[in-house]
Image 1 (cartoon, rainbow, N blue to C red):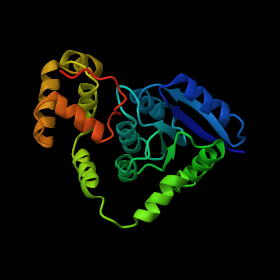
Image 2: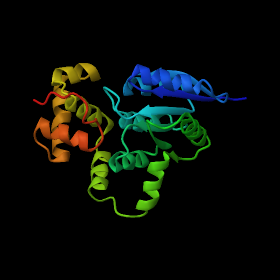
Image 3: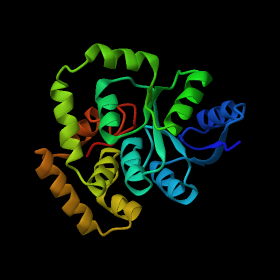
Length: 225
């Protein structure tokens, strides 16, 4: 039997170990790698080429949404399932726009997680039952402001998204430059571009925007300068 290879991308070790232990009980699923940051998830996906990535949204250094965008661009054969503690429409809408294979809430059961992995492997999409119900009920209604927010995020480049997240996490230009391997002057240029595109002209505003857009979660400890 060809087993479905899975990469787990989750920054909390206890959650990651729990997922690995649960999936170990499934004969047709094999966990081939684990990532603690979004950037590591992108790197390991390129290296291991798993069939499915189970990706937490709230990943440090590079959030799960941007990591998903990069994975689907560079390794299109891999399917990504988003795992999140939040069912907000803003998050779900972005996941759908990115082309991810599904969206699961963290309180989901092993049976639902396994079913999602199998469906993703078959080329289908899968959502947690409560999310799926809300999507059906919402139907073709206009997404309103959150939909507009999603479109604005889509206009940002991958590098701009990385810079935005690191700034919103409270990192100074020097720290952002070191993390991304670019010059401080380049970081400043990206920040200027972000502010121009988003029409936001202070760091605190960028942070609020990043939270509203689902780039970071409001529970992240922030240092607003």
